[in-house]
Image 1 (tube, helix red, strand yellow):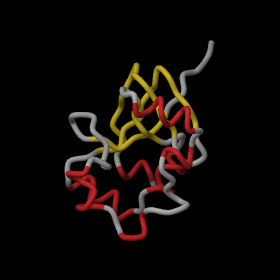
Image 2: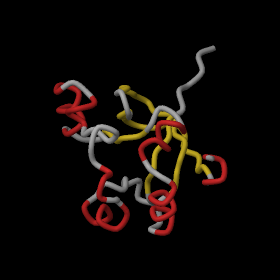
Image 3: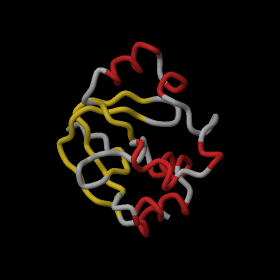
Image 4: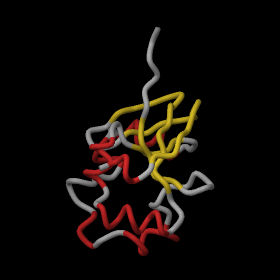
Length: 118
């Protein structure tokens, strides 16, 4: 039997991620952008990035380690205070990049406590 892939994501109760303009200035540190945090065109082929912007795709992480390489402890704590949570998702469709994944749909979502991340 094939085991479903589990990925990690940070989202709020409306399933929005923290990069929405409304939230970014409240949590992101100055040096957050750069090679450790590539945009979609830097981490995926241009055709994959274009597919993402057509809609219904979301960003996430292939592992806890990838998530923790992207967000530091202070950023995660601030995001939690802003109403975000870390979740494990079993996506219906998944494309892996070097530092992140994009996915579409989900068959299961489970909240992860910060204690379980460290």
